[in-house]
Image 1 (cartoon, rainbow, N blue to C red):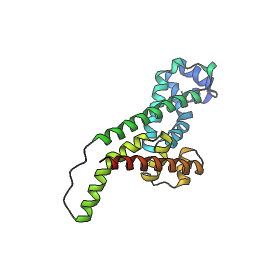
Image 2 (image 1 turned 120 degrees about the vertical axis):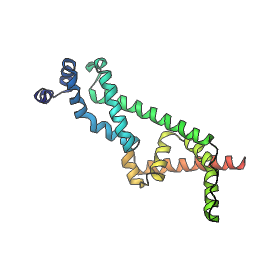
Image 3 (image 1 turned 90 degrees about the vertical axis):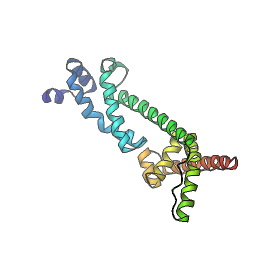
Length: 190
């Protein structure tokens, strides 16, 4: 089988090969997995990227007979699956933040005065912050969470998302302004 895979040089060869023998679809995976993984990792995070990249190839394998080489190559076809899976993940993430916003804060654990004040403040702000995160568009949320949770520098965020440092700064500025405005609005109404 290795000799067969080595002979499959073009996408058309790969398609013809896996149509004769579905096991040869592994050559598609071997050729394009890294590209898909890096793309997804640049849009989300590395743990999720592995899962979504794997799911991309599972979907592609399941739909391999629907691939039409006359409409384009395997690579863009695979990137289409990956892009749809990233969007689905982001919608799920937004729903998660909205659900967090609806939760009642956890009870305060008694302790040192400063610890209690910090805990109460954090608990009080959690629903507001979750609402604010859900209100951001995907690009703004990605930049903010890469900075806050991933602790990446502006340069690292730009590399991860494939955008310029200026774009990172403007998205972060918009995200901060939206979050601050929403938190101010919510805390005034309490």
